[in-house]
Length: 631
Image 1 (cartoon, rainbow, N blue to C red):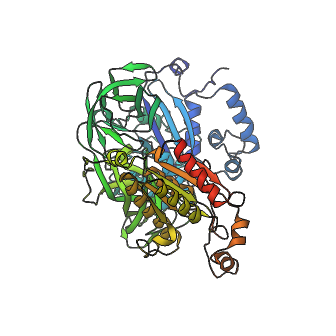
Image 2 (image 1 turned 45 degrees about the vertical axis):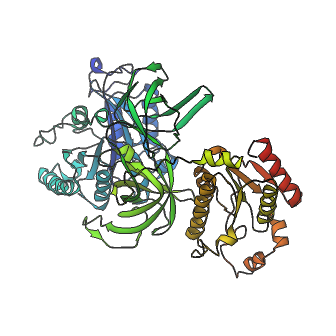
């Protein structure tokens, strides 16, 4: 198949797809509904001769049947791929397209303009070096223009092309273009967007897209393509300090232990000194391994496996660093772009994912919201979908990070609702609020291994989960007694008992029940550190909560025991009368009745007490501990 002929670029200048030495620019198109984003991208694809003949034939056919241009080529159809998009003539999802000119290659993210899809726009902009913001010449700068520009500013996009589209519909009025330009430059200055190029265009006709328009002789600046080819967006991350968030610990056999990840910034050489954060332990790089073989040096953007000179504890979520020390804190100030339809509420728990780290987080306060129309800071207690604000966060443990303005990879995060598993917000870290900054764990002379040898056992957590009435506490109590008979050191943490003490201040809202699980997990981890066996009997209905508890100890130290007694049998037993109250509406939010229970997908042990007695279940657990050398 051949590439279609287009008059905008001579055939001799057509880019070759096998040219790999041209630099690549990632940019995003954004703006309000019907401003012409998809049409502009489609025109760029067409004029850059990136379309094959069959694609051009399909565009011609579809323009006649579902197009909105009266039978002329509807370039938006090259980008709008979803049926709903074509039916409504709008963009819903983020569409990524690739094209090239003789000077540069491009990856463009065409994002939706509707306010309800702002989360998709933020996703497309998160990796962009430059943004093309479209404005309808008839409407000028509107709220959605301001919202998208504010998000671009928060995401660190400092180069913007303001494409004032549909100039033909205002008679190519240069005065109107100048007024829109002045208004947007004022907005950009308020947001800290330093580089703005304003270009008048007619996207369907190609005016000032690739070729200069003959209908606007008063404009003498570059075309969109010319500016995209020449824009200098370089920010050499290889010159910043070395940072490697550890994604995976590669241990194929006993003689090899490597730490895999993508280098976020800086360079590293074999023999260089590195530190493991947040522990602060220091060592040297022994080898640098890549898919292409062993190397002496690696730089930002490369995926590598590093082996270290010393056997030290490094886990997923840790960061290998060299040069200056990154920030380490458990309290942060950050800007949020709120995505979830359920409003943000201070005090609710979320899972914060930053790089390869996953940490429990609580939004302690909303400092202010941002008025999109006036850019003023407003007081408030919550954020609704698509609103922007600054918040304070408290984390379950210290996070290794950089301020977003300094490092996009190390300073960005998302918040995940642990119940619905939806992405609730995207965040940009401003600064640390905690005195925990750059404080490392003190390395104790008497550690977990010493205490375990004294007790002649392997410390671990036995985490019993299941419905109320399944038999968790009964079995845990039997196991605790058997361990005592065997001369082992254990402690039983029962959910009901803890609510008489350390958790007596907690109620039964979703946030408080998550905090209940978090505290129990922290206590269990302390017992493991003391070389003991911790038994936890807790409904803990959500997999995300149990996963966070598992992360508090080493992988082999967490044994999930699913007391898988069916709900019907638990309700028949109803030892506390709670099921009866829940069915009568006297008790709300009860697990299994009006609140969900997420059964473990791969528990180490599964027990159904409708088929197995509590005594037999106890012996099965003791046998598991013996077979796996915990006793």
